[in-house]
Amino acid sequence: MRSTRPDPGAGKGQFTRARGRTVSPPARPAAARNPRILIVEDEPALLRALQINLRARGYEVAAAPTGREALAEATRQPPDAILLDLGLPDLDGAEVIRELRGWSAAPVIVISGRAGSGDKMGALDAGADDYVIKPFNMAELLARLRAALRHGDHAPDRARFSIGRCEIDLTSHTITRNAGPLPAARPAAGQPATPAAGQPATPSETVHLTPTEWRLLEILLTSAGQLVSSDRLLTEVWGHGFERSTHYLRFHMARLRRKLEDDPPRPRYLLTEPGMGYRYQP
Ligand code: CA
Image (tube, rainbow, N blue to C red):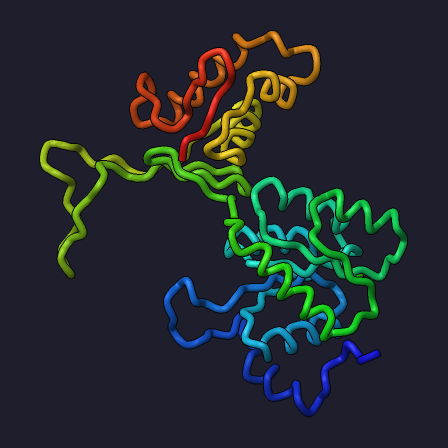
């Protein structure tokens, strides 16, 4: 069994060189950038060993010692994969996975000292992709990470969405309606931006939703492009027994459109599928 601790001779140079938050690789086209890995681990020695090993193999690395910081970091810069310790000081790892899975499809490999099948199944049920038990073999972990990245290749992160001029961030639950009018011509260097003729510029503003509106919107956005049945929306937002209360849906969908669509009577994003349900069309 190989140690999880780095070879001090081989690792030291890497670590010193990579002391900043992330290693900046040479400029490349976005499609060819190095995969970004978020390590969530509160054990400093293990965190360091993982950072050194990943950076030595060209990964960009971000680290978070708590569940809350991990969720914040994943929102700020969505990772391509996540290595997650289950035993964190604030949240349980499974809770972190469940929150992430509301909006992120990035593969999650759990690294845990808990070998019990209950913990393992709990993590996998919450949405983890793989499970490695401490102490682990670094070469094996790296092989599993490569496999997870291959599988995750076509799964984009879904934390941010847009509806017309509104930018929606599901993690921080914020919506910003961008300044109009759009599109604005890019001003020449040194020149102030000027609105298009005849259209007044409006400042960016925050859009506020009620908890019910958020819940509805979340379900639609995370099923982007797909029909979501009225039954499912009513059950998930209001609970069992409300399957016939389609007037609730009509009321709240109308409010969402008024708040988010550029032209609410002719919605382009929050669409009704008559007799069936609703769809968010990106
Ligand atoms: Ca721990």
